[in-house]
Structure formats: structure tokens, C-alpha cells
Length: 121
Image 1: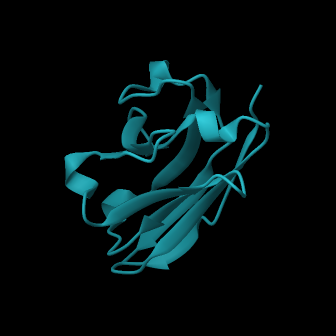
Image 2: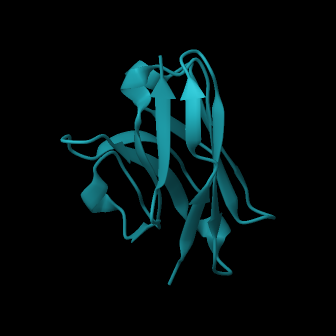
């Protein structure tokens, strides 16, 4: 069983940046794919990025270049660096974990509670 706790969300102005963190419990963190999804009000949950257990990174095309996912297996933590934020990035951001993740939410077994990111004009 994996417990995920996100942090780092908040209010930021357009063009600003945030770094989200996700701390994971469990002794086998290094064997899990780790991901980030987001959900804006009135919209479906959407894929943002994930990093495989081996370190391969996957991004939604529209966020590639602005967002960077990374992991620290020693600290059982995954990060999402978000730059050049826009109001369209406003959402709750969720951390996910699975032995074999992917682009669809249904593929992920474990979810955090989410952290709110709000980008203001």
C-alpha cells in the first residue's frame, strides 16, 4: 500500500512558477511509476506528466517545456516543476503511483489528496 501526500501548491501570478512535491510511503518507491494529474473546476481529470521507475519522463504535449517531472528515490519523493504558469493551469494537482502507469487515470492505483494551484492575472 502506498500513501501519497502532495505539497507546494498555492497562489501565483501569471508567468510565475511553482514546485509541487509528493512524498510517498512504502519501501518499494523506486519500483513505482509516479505521475501527476490535474482537475480544473467543471472539467475531467487530465494527465500532466509521469516518470517511470527507470526515470523515463512522459508529458502531455502542451505542457512539455514548461513542466518538468523528477524523482528522488532516496527521499521517496516526486516533483513537478511548473514554469511560465497561466490561468489555464489553475486546478487541483494530484500525485499518483502505480507499478505500471500510463496516460489515463484508471491506470493508476494510488492517489494523493491533491494540492490546489491557482494562477491569477
